[in-house]
Length: 336
Figure 1 (cartoon, helix red, strand yellow):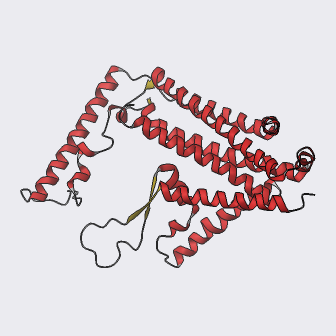
Figure 2 (tube, rainbow, N blue to C red):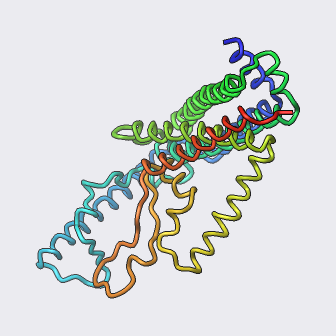
């Protein structure tokens, strides 16, 4: 317990951690100020106009669905402007997740229900970068400066020391991320109440937002563990940064170009970024160039999707494998 407390104090005292927390606060303040400057409380005239536009759009959707049913039944002749999906249920307003609402037709008004998820994605991206950099520098600086050796003189158990460092990092980061996200979304909800609209918060809004939040927290922890493992293997913070940079240039850019030249089928399934997007968003869709080639009559859906489960398996397996290798190498190698 003393080891964990000491590591937590060391983590909080690091100037790089304090700088990143300050940058997080500055980015938060700028986002809030920009939102407040670009939003206003809608007038009754604006609300009435927006409500009428939303009602007209819903009516148009209902008419389009009704016309689709009639065309399928053969009672109406289609023209060139008609959109005919395989199943008219695809354009049935009653089955749509989100119908046009008043908030969609208001200009210069911050609507919390519409902006909460994009804002949360922005926060998750920052926290994931924060976690990776802090995780890499936390162990990398100690290995490079000899701080780990001094710590082992006090507690001569390598795996316990490294495990305490990783556990302290993940625990501290989880607490900071949870607190930051609650404050972050709470402030923007207050902005919607005071200088905009909260929008439709019923139905599955909060459950959907909570799912994104949980997946985001997992991603932040995985990013921190990945940075920690890479820096442990390379004995330096720059080793983790260099590994990520090399992967992005060589594989995400270079290999993608090679796959395109060779006409590889579904190249996105070989990219780590695809599984990251699938995990964070719940499902990611990609275009398959070969799906609609050849003699195909009628409608062709050339998209394929990756769900959150494969994304989690790939990200978790990669992080776990690198962490195990890092602990094994740390236990066996000379630290001096």
